[in-house]
Amino acid sequence: MKSNPKHILFLPRWYPNQFDPMFGLFVKKQAESVAIYNMVSVLYVQGISTEEELAQKQSIEAPNLFTYIYYYNNSSLRAWNILRFWYYMLIGFISIWKKHKKPDLVHVHILTRLGTFAFFLKAIFNIPYIITEHWSRYLTIPGTYKGWLRKKLGQIVAHRAKAILPVSINLAVAMQKHGLLNSNYHIIPNVVDDLFFQNIQKKKSKESTIFIHVSTFEDRSKNISGILRTLKRLSERQTDFEFWFIGEGIDFDFLTEYSKKLNILQELIKFHGLKQGQGLVDLYYSADYLVLFSNFENIPVVINEAQACGLPVIASKVGGIPEIINRENGFLIEPGKEDQLESTIEYILTNKPSFNASEIQKNALARYSYKTVGQQITSIYRAP
Image 1 (cartoon, helix red, strand yellow):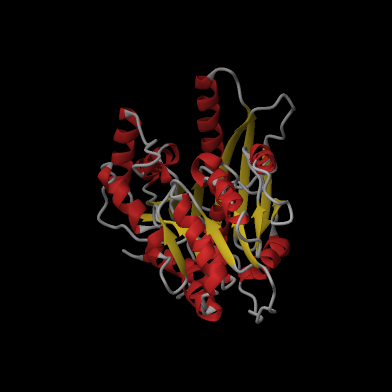
Image 2: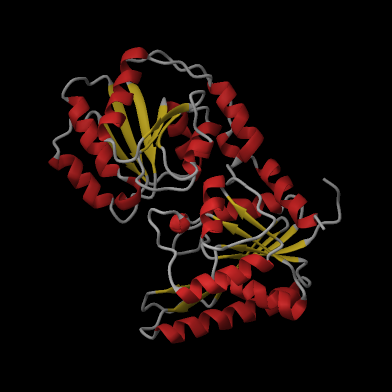
């Protein structure tokens, strides 16, 4: 990768902040990957529903990565919230330009609001922009990309972008069906932190096969309740497994109570709560399979993380997941088909199929590492 780094302005709709360090963490990792080869300024504006007095601005500096977060208290008047959002976006942009220099390119994460801001920056200051999209709202299920004005603005913004970078082919097709047309679509996966790429040790022989589920505990999409019902039926026939649930979210309390209501043997399941860093990595490396039974999904980063740890994956055949899961690295099942999930786990427990963990990790390193993703995106930045 040649030198002459560019100044890239990241405009994310989701980003880790002092109120939620996990929110949009995958966007932060992409910013870090790009910062290997460029100077990156991140401008993030967030309204907070709290009566506490908020510090208006938060600044974070890392090598080649400068993050500026603006907070404001949400009002009951939606129009006032929107005006303040745009005010802080403008103030933040001017501040970044003065402190560093005029951005060479704007990198938007999530249409439509921020794409509109980038569109005006291009019109006024001739700064090109690209768009990365992660959101499953464009898919048939959940099908939440609605509204005439939103769609019209989205089409205009998408057409004028230098490039559009969805994380899967499936998402790219869905976006184009909504009229988000651009001749320069590139599939760019989410980044996996280098921490996940550790030496794979041969697992000791043990009586129980360990399955893990890692998510934000939102049952409508993740269908954790379906996993619990499956485990209940399976546990009535065999108990040679453990199932670990990792994460927290809006349905965490409901799902822990639901597991008790189903009367699943407590020694078979464990809710670990939120895990980060080495604690999360250790759980991946201790497990034998990752399980995702989502009703709808794009490509969740936990699949990338599991593959970085050499884990095979059992996942629903939704969104872009079939693009990366195959017979060499896991099993695909139909969404909502609890009998298929049950029979797949039972097959694994009975037949002990073998997967090449080192090969799974090698393929993940070639696709999801900081350097790989950073190089791919920087090549797009520098293309004519």
